[in-house]
Amino acid sequence: MKLAILSRALRSYSTQRLRTAALDRGHDVKVLNTLRFGIDLSGDEPDLQFRGKRLSTYDAILPRIGNSITYFGTAVVRQFEQMDVYTPNTSYGISNSRDKLRATQILSRHQIGMPATTFVRDRADVIPAIERVGGAPVVIKLLEGTQGIGVILAPELKVAEAIIETLSSTKQQVLIQRFVKESKGRDIRALVVGDRVVAAMRRVAKGDEFRSNVHRGGSVEPVTLDPEFERVAVRSAQIMGLRVAGVDMLEGNDGPLVMEVNSSPGLEGIETATGLDVAGSIIDYIDNQVAFPEIDVRQRLTVSTGYGVAEIAINDASEMVGKKLGESGLRERDITALTLQRGTGVIPNPNASHVLEANDRLLCFGKLEEMRSMIPSRRKRRSRVRKLPAEPIHDA
Image 1 (tube, helix red, strand yellow):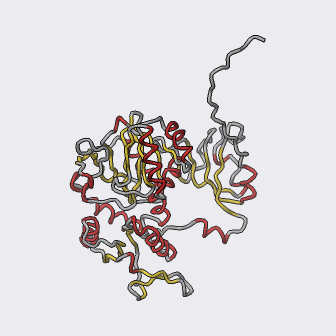
Image 2 (image 1 turned 120 degrees about the vertical axis):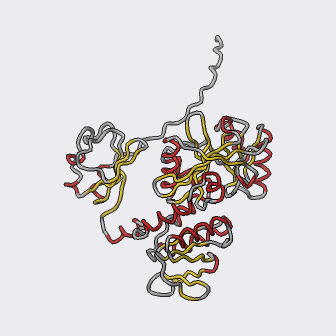
Image 3 (image 1 turned 90 degrees about the vertical axis):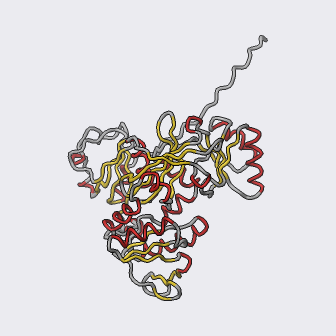
């Protein structure tokens, strides 16, 4: 396999470990400075230049895109994708994870447990927003902070309001998040590769510091994850479009709460804590997947006029409830079920014997007109009604 590691930090621990792991396995590997690429759109096919010369052919890339070059870095990764070069982390996955608001929006759609979070811009909305997440103390996060930078614990309502007002005056945008007291100063970092967690550690903050990042003096220890923590970590990474990711979770009273999904996780802390060859696991995974470059389904479907992908929700009134998938009539209508989602679980390529239940969701490919007739009308959102105290009744 010919592999390119996209990194500006040639001498960093993570880059060196990945390079060494690839060489030890007999692969041809180069570390290429992401900023030295040129995106070439002048020819008949998408191409790349590196240091002013046409880039040679690679089987796979491993992006290590720093926060400061997200826009250009993801553009380079996207160009590799258009050239059908395999990458474990997609350009949209890196972009999704880098923006804390976007990441939270995406994960909340898929019922991933997270600390209660809100986002507002107007000063008048700040106090109601803090109340919605449970009141002070609250955690205030810059949308694009890293390594614990831009994460502030506000112990009181007035303090939180002042911090947000100050940051807003400097054009900084922030999230307001519930402070999970039971996990103060501790979190879990799970290193996801493909469909499994290959290593996990607990990070513990130093002294009174509530941020547990190693860069802020936190200590680390290996940890064996409960199955629920492992499941949530893998799902979170996959939902974001990442096959190599560090998933940070708080240990809430009711289970794991995802804080962040990192597309370029550092390896030094977790390899030191666990003694595991995480870099080797990443290289082995890429080697096994290199024949399957990322496919943008939206691009491919443009050649199939009248066909597309849609999600069909099966409600209580659907005549498909209680029927086997093979008896649902989908095949006769030129519709193929790609996945069946039941609760938080997903069944890929469901077979004809699967019995459909109310609230199942089928991701299907087929004739758009046929699928359109099967999609139920959107349910109206239930308004949140705040109970007001009854007014006193005055005699006439």
